[in-house]
Length: 378
Length: 225
Image 1 (cartoon, helix red, strand yellow):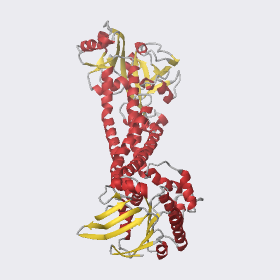
Image 2 (cartoon, chains in turn green, orange):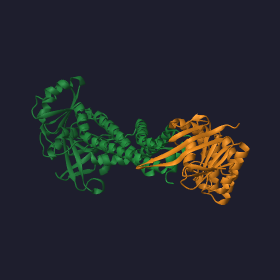
Image 3 (cartoon, chains in turn cyan, yellow):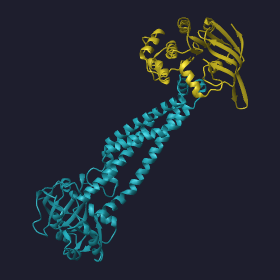
Image 4 (cartoon, chains in turn orange, cyan):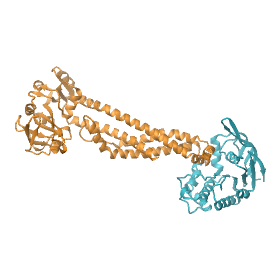
């Protein structure tokens, strides 16, 4: 029966991992969005997925809008805090781990950026000396990967510019940790995008006015407005298809496990025909035999379930690694969070699986005629 | 007057196969009284085992009348037959048919479980000691010899204190020494406990130990001694 324990274990492992991924992804996404500090993001008109990714992760090859938009919006009295941003990514052939090449993400910001993200603290160094200085502040992970410290020079390959590191942020647990920040004016100059922005982050004084504010912004030509709720929905939609596919695989695995367990128990019933016959001769009723086979199946499935849960818990790190490589956007923090309630659901599922898978073999065994069963194979 | 355990009147058992019917037992009249030790002998295919299955309530009869301890079981349902087997009848088979995953004691206790009686370990151990297996209590069947397995099967049969012990070729798979041990146990049970024993056998030595011998041929009783 061991192979069928493996089948059940794999099905349960997949199920628990999926629950864990769903929970971890939602929590991570909510955390990322909470730490954005924005209520709204204004971007140039374009793909909503692109805008959502920009909001959470930054990105290159994006559309740009004139900073005149910012200058018009900034005077709105409903705004509490506002910050203009210019995002660009640069491929560095010698960058990344072991020098295998990597994209470095640059973000041009103004000091207002820190007002929207009060949790961003300097680990070392401080703010730019001037609004157009050739200086950089590195996110925690960006500095770790590049092994940078204050005073180091950063060469930007495609622009042939050199920046001096003047600050390193503490870890925030968000995508900001991987970004290299430069003064907005510097970014516009070195990336040859004068007067351009990729996005504007806005926090309102009163969140209740968001719909009305958003509506008013649409009077501005060539922009689109993305709210936090929309971003969350967009990202969730983005991964929903992948999750649906994974759910389908889990369902197929469970179905195969049921068929496998049914087949194994059925084979076992046939092999034990004489044993069942003698139990009946000793006074076992049809119900007694049914219960024995059913309970055996449930125990087999529960054992498989326990193995599967162990598999999911122990393998969550590997699953997380694979998901991170696969998804277009993965929030910071744990991506697979396995709660005790998932384990209970998984264990109950295996019991139900056992109940379903064991019914037919148990019925076959219970309806065996004692004489025919005892004399079978004689 | 001794209690009548089994009364068969024109007991007939027919097996219906595709395209043919086989009359395994034909109009057998038989009475078994408490304390009887009956052996049934006859050539292979003479209906010995079918007769045992019928009076052991393991199968329904096709015609005639069968009364077991005052209960007419001629047309009994499976649940009625189960209830009679559980309370009054025990079996010993040629192949022992012990549950391979259970220990000696657990095998012996099994009928009590099905009879919804408390698991009387002491009684099981006492019976096992009586059949000479006091030193094999926690062994599984694979660790026992043929003779030991059959003695476990006898202990299992005795645990519910049956009114009737049915044995189908109990020495069929045993060597001479083990066969003699089983024959001695049967004789002892019959004499000391007045246990009613009905044995189907080819073993003339076992058959000759019985107080009554029935010869079957072609499903009919041809001789009673």
